[in-house]
Amino acid sequence: MARVPYLEKSDLAPEHRDLLSREITLYKALAHSPGALKSMSGVGAYIRHKSTLDPKLRELAILQVGYLARSPYEWSHHVKIGHDFGLSDDDIRALAEETAGRASKLDPLAKLVLRAAREITRDLSMSDETFAALAAQLSREHMIDLTMTISFYNAVVRVLATLQIDVEPEYQKYLAAHPLPK
Image (cartoon, rainbow, N blue to C red; front, top):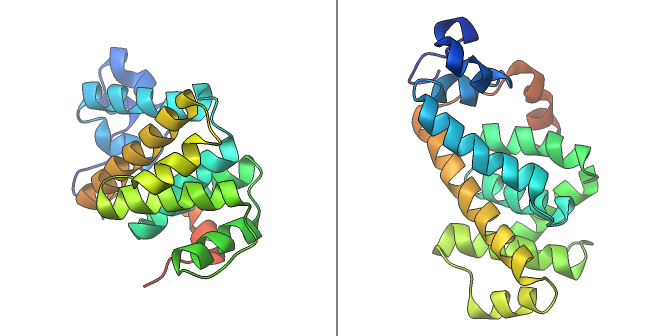
């Protein structure tokens, strides 16, 4: 159960009701601070809709963060979003294999993206080796967007955990299909 009550549009001043255009539990909790929600959703919207980074790579990076953080909310939401952008169940299972240090059938660039996400999440920075390998294949814009994506979602999983945000019922099936490790 969340540490703050979930707000509904009717609980908000009229000028803030549009902040709940996506009626997800994360936004319903963050709506207690309309400015924070607006700022956070702005960065999220850039990452999801305006970045030119390949959406499959973006979603693998986000999923890696959610997997490492053992964040049911982040994981379930981005399993669904990953599917929407073309990730297969095999791709998602391959992420778990890569995280465990086992070989997978992911392409080399996807493996590098996952490694970058693991390094930033675990070590707070991408190694020189990983950065150089990615920079040889991605533009500077994509390097910045990838770094911002991984870093932003590391912040998101911490907000989710601290506020104990509940996974909505419609996302439970993604947790059942792809359970997080204990």
